[in-house]
Image 1: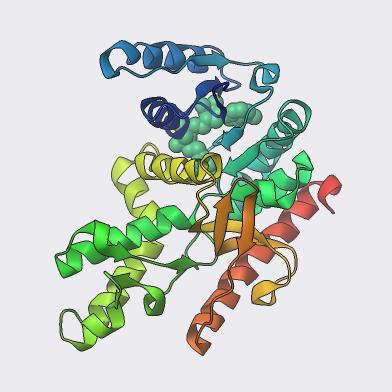
Image 2: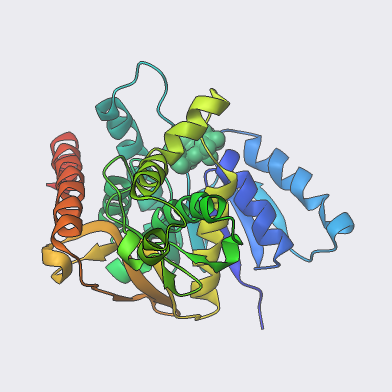
Length: 320
Ligand code: APR
């Protein structure tokens, strides 16, 4: 059986980390694409030289030509610019929207059968735009946010309760931004709802509120510390878990930015929801019951995403 092919569009901090993880796991042969001349080629060479030490069999190549992503089974997109000091959200939106247009066209021409995972921010708008520009089916284009946000939530909860992160099952819904909705009612430790653990006196409502707040600001906290960039290890690890679910037809239920049309009262929007990932991409969006507070928080979050889509449509007539 031929090896799988994984194309990474964007060979920056996340792209390079994705390539290393995918190679170590022998997920397939890897193509790193970037517009910057030399960066994908240099990283591919460096990473290839990990092979003899780590003992992985994976070909890793770097390119500036979209033709080289042809036939990719999975495409993970991190192309774009991060928000820099002095740049408004709208400035970022305008720049990365243009990037999504060129990436979408590249995928449409060369890898129309791929499962596409978008990581570029602002995530919920960029994954929507990438789907529009690429014309791929909605079930084959998804955004990575919830796996990362839930991992951040789980990390803080494991620290709070002094338990293994392996036993924490944390749940985050909504857009990837300040309005995301960490849902404690669906968050458990070895099946025990955290709300019950709080009632047992193992933590407090105030501490839970602080952890929810820290989770919402999780990306910003890391930007504040790094000063010159944003998080890349956990974002890359999250996208790899999604790619593995697709390639292995694992039917995992993961929180992802999926296309929601009809469920959660939404019409044609990409937003963070639990979804089944298997060989057909996003096989099902799972609609869970929410209490009134959670519903209101999700509405605030989806309203913020809708605003971004209006801004995208104003910026590019092809999206209107
Ligand atoms: N096509 C392909 N690659 C591009 C394009 C383009 N049109 N425009 C920029 N790039 C490349 C840059 O050359 C750079 O190598 O995208 C890469 C982005 O890498 P980094 O700046 O290191 O960013 P990274 O930390 O990897 O994050 C990428 O993910 O989490 C989000 O907010 C983050 O939007 C950002 C993205």
